[in-house]
Length: 447
Image 1 (cartoon, rainbow, N blue to C red):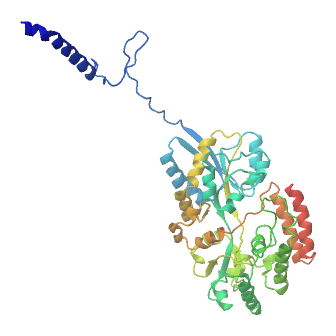
Image 2 (image 1 turned 30 degrees about the vertical axis):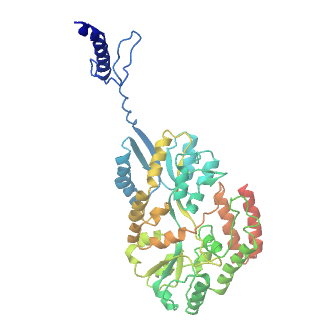
Image 3 (image 1 turned 180 degrees about the vertical axis):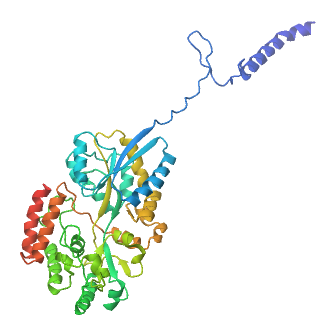
C-alpha cells in the first residue's frame, strides 16, 4: 500500500503528459489538420477555410481590322489565319473589313476626324509618317514585347514605321525588287547564269546592244524604279535619321551614281521605259503580239511571278540585283505595316492579334499561300518557303534592301527626286545641278 501511494503522483503526471501529447497530434472534430491554424471570427468561433477564387474568363471583345488584301490574300486570312487565331484567343472576334484602295489614305483621315477609326489597320508603309503627323496613330514603342518584334524583323521594313523619334507601327508583310532575266536572251548574250556585279551586267548589255536589244531595264526615273540602281551605285538620299538631304543626295558619290546611269542611257544600254517608251517592262521581257523579246532583264517584285505563275517558271531567271562598288546590292522596300489608331476601343486585343500575325507560323503560311515576303527573319529563312521557287532571291535581297525616305511629305519628296533624275536623263540639267536643286527642295520638305 505504501509503495502504491508512493508512485501514484508520478503515474498521474505521466498520464497528464500523454493526454496533452495525443491532443496536440490528433485531428480536430471537423478533421481540419492540426498543423493548420483555423481562422476565427470576432466571437472566437471557428470559420471555414476559404479557397482561392477561380480566375474569371476573359471578356469577349471585337477588334475592328481594316485591310486592303487582294481577293486571294483575303481568302487565306478569313479561312485559315483568323480561325487559327481563335483557337488560342476564343474571346477575341476579328471583324476584318476589306477596304477599297482608291483614295484609301484620305478615307482614313476622314474616318479619324469623325471618330470612326478601326482598332488596327494594314496600311501602305509610305503612309505611316504622314498619318503619324496628322495625329491619327499612336506610337507603339511601349507596347508589350515591342523590342522583340524589332529584333525579329528585317531592319528595312521596320524603318518604314519611324517618325520623329518613335515607331508608329510594325511591318506585317514586305516586298522588294530583284533582277528578272530572260533565259533566252541571257544565253544570247553569252551568259549561262545571271551576272553578280554591275560591271558584268553592263558588259552583257553591250552585247545586247550589238543585237539591237536592251540589256538593262529601269522602269522610269521615279521614286520606286530608280532608287535600287542609285543606291547600288553608291548614291544616298538623306542621312540615316532622314532629316537632311544636302550633303547626301548631292554628295560626290551620289553625283557619280547618277552620272553612271545617264551614261548608260547615252550609250543606248537602257531600255525605252526609262523615259516612258514602249514596249513596257513585262512586254519587252517576254515579247508581245508575236514580237520577240527585246529586254534581257527587268527589275520587279514578286507579283511578277505570282501573277504569271507557271507561264514563266521555265523561261525566266529570278536573281539578286547585281552588286555595286561596295560588294552589295541595295533594292527598295515596299509592303504593308500594322498601325494603331487614337481612340481605338480594343488596343490591347488588336496588339495581341498583330503579334499573332507576326509569328513565324503565320508569316510562313501567308508566304506559301500568297507569295508575300515575311518581315519575320526566321520565317523568311524557313525551309517551307522553298516550295515557292522565286522567293529565295527576294528574301536574300531583303538583307540589304532600303526604305524610301519615311516622311509625312513622302509623295512630294518622291516627285522632287523623280523630276531631278528625269532632268539629268533628258539633258535639261547636269547630274550635279539636278541633285543640288533637289537636295535643297527635299530639305524643306523634311523640315
